[in-house]
Image (cartoon, rainbow, N blue to C red; front, side):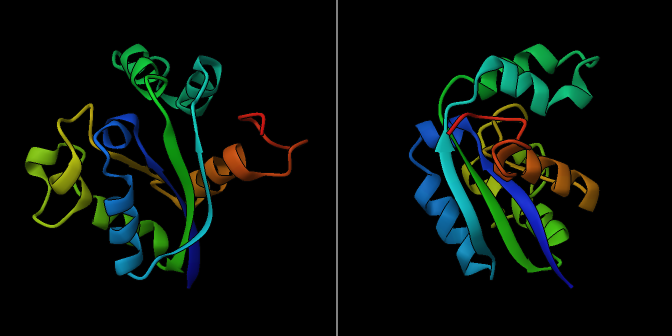
Length: 143
């Protein structure tokens, strides 16, 4: 079944100049990039996007990291996009990620792990709408 998922190239990978390599990796693995935008998240937007983690110890650090530089946000499409993107990203901790995965290739640490991906169909729908819904329905980012 054709699915959509959200992918974010995080500030660490952007600052290191890896965005083009990550995008090439995505395309090489059969994904179509349906929408793409590079932006700098505001603190409010980062807090809203990661609200499900607000009670966890790493929330403040995560928000500060995500606003530390530009990100590239994409909607990816392919059969089984959600699971395939999660597999292509690799484990959250790059040291534990499989060879050839994006996080193994481009991630520096568990906190600076190059990419984000939706973890379920419900999350993908919510996250895509956060960035790419019609402007009056959108939660994020004035364009």
